[in-house]
Image: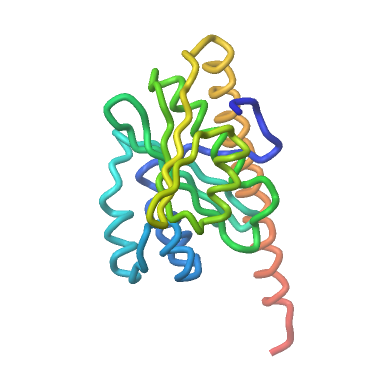
Length: 197
């Protein structure tokens, strides 16, 4: 599950807080319930994002052509493992974004010498359950909630090099998309100036 995918996944920093907040706010309210286990008001979402510790946790994202986050994964280290949360905007589901995020989180957790990857969600969260099953996670459901776990193999040179390569590809992807976006905006601005008033 740690191999590269065709979808670049970038590790985010605290500079990405606003993009991450916009991502969560763009999710339908039902997705908030499925992702966080409860409905989340916009203020609570902003508080959640403001409280993320990017020095302790890892947050990964997939960007679209407008440099908006269409998918995000949060990896929070625990005693001997890490808990994972994944979200993907509705228009980008079924395209491998969630699996790419899981793969990147999996590689990160292995390279941090963690022993297990966990995810907790409502059992009705079909998207997360699909990702967990596809990854070979052990899933236990009880009282409407699901807990999934995956034992992580020890890190090796391949997983370390793979993660470095994935980050470089993601950085290049964001740079290309930023250049294309700037070009589109400049062209649109020039067209507006040429329009008769």
